[in-house]
Image 1 (cartoon, rainbow, N blue to C red):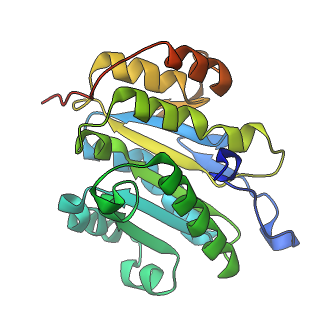
Image 2 (cartoon, one colour):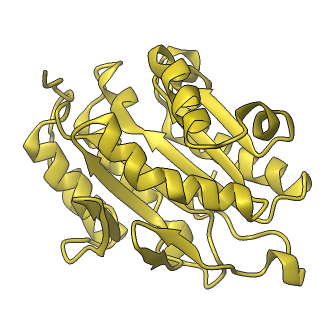
Image 3 (cartoon, helix red, strand yellow):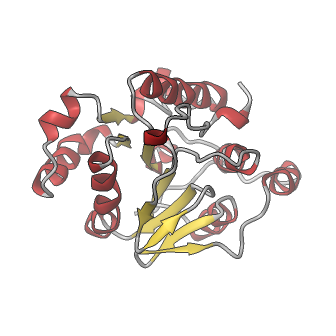
Length: 232
């Protein structure tokens, strides 16, 4: 599966599906819609991202959340406490709350190509269901669950950029959330370099440290980083 299909193009060309402003952390997100978001705790994360998710519901779009299966109930409770009609948006297909084992860790391990194909399938299914856009929020601590090499994580993150770089059409935004208390500082630095946009301190910023994917992947081929280490 080519990585150009990871985030995908908006499939519907009717006026209702043409670009609508995507608001994220006080700014409007453009087609550079691959974002890394850093938080110290769940309260910070939800304060920043709940308005983004609620906007998706209000615009008739789809939200797909990939979460730690141990925290699934907490996620649903937070959405409900923020005024989201959790049962309704789940039943009408506007919300998919997926465990890691249903996305990045299908089969108990991570395979970049399988994951990218699954994301494309989710977007295609959403378009067929009539949703003009799919918003993804992924808790990235799944990478710590299986002793994944840092190289594999960073290659995946860098490759995902090809979708927005090779298309002028709106893309389905992807927010990769990282718990700063769980990842080492050196991994965080490299993660920042693989995303054109970053959320730090609850604000969306253009990332001056972003490295184009081809350049980053070439650099990565000359490095061996070893397994990710858990912090805390």
